[in-house]
Image (cartoon, rainbow, N blue to C red):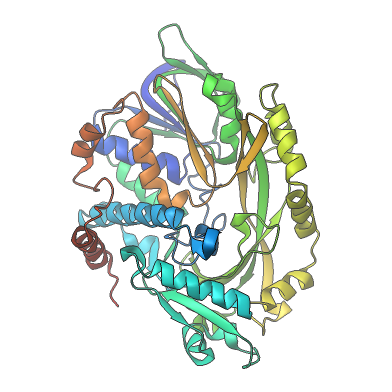
Length: 493
């Protein structure tokens, strides 16, 4: 890894903005496909993976759609749309496949970032239990969720997750589903694993405490980037730019002035966790338990009681509790939102604000909650929660996508990649379940980039030693991939 000072002008094949899970995944795939490519990573902070990728900035669930009820919306005739759940599950299996390949080759150490822990959905009340049963029946019919179990037995739920039933009336109507092959992922640690592997090779440079402040397309169809490092302004030239700067990406995308950027704006949502380090409690809970979101809550605010390993220590997290700020990053500026409002998106942004006034009110009300009020919310899932066992910690800062449409604006959740027409710039907008699906997303980024120009077959040939491009619909192929991942990564029933 090079950490020398910039020269006045340096040429790179690719410059990636942000040293989080997205940029480092892209760097890894690009280097595996084209070892000779010369890459620069620019990071505003003094170390990698500290913003959206940070261990406390995301749920660490290893989203595979096993337990997140919002990924399986109920549609007409009380049927479930499994499209999103299957897409996410497939993408996460591809992530597991990459990690297994790298681990088998001795390039990363999975013990530093991956642990297997069951994923559980939990509900109470007659209607919610009926909803969960119908969801279970629909999901267990497809190969990806064949291993899902369902119970409405108080005793069995107590065995799965005792903190959920402790102190709960035995006559309460409750139900749960469980998939044992769930994960807890420390994406910050995974980012460092990637970089440790990458920086052992040549042609990768990382500059920390450096910030992109402007970018312009030159007459030669390269990008000129203006960087600030240690108070000094410097110019760089590159063929390709990837904007993976978390919430700040929207501001940088707008500065690129590509036509594709004009229809986008951003809606910031902050978060907080309740954390418990009481060893007696953490040892009794070994699961990620997801419930149903409150009415009016954004999808990333689905309540969950999680087993987490942070810096080698097992803890409990509950949340996230949402909030509102005008910052686009945890360490951003209060002017981030206002500077993103342009003539091309102003009506879309205000239209979204008007259409989602209940969401705005919800975010503000969450921000004003007291510690006792948050504990009362926790007690809906963990009845015996003690206010003295829990403390509040900031979670991640997310910027949801606002998209200009014919009749105003649309607020959408999830992630979206914006590409310039010539493939010289890509930007990742949005949030969850981005980290878990980063491998799949970055493969799509490469296919759209000038390096491969829609030549999926060429990229597949270059990366077939690491991942297969989409798990085959044939059930035997799928089972073989899952079995191989399980064997290498160490999951056994």
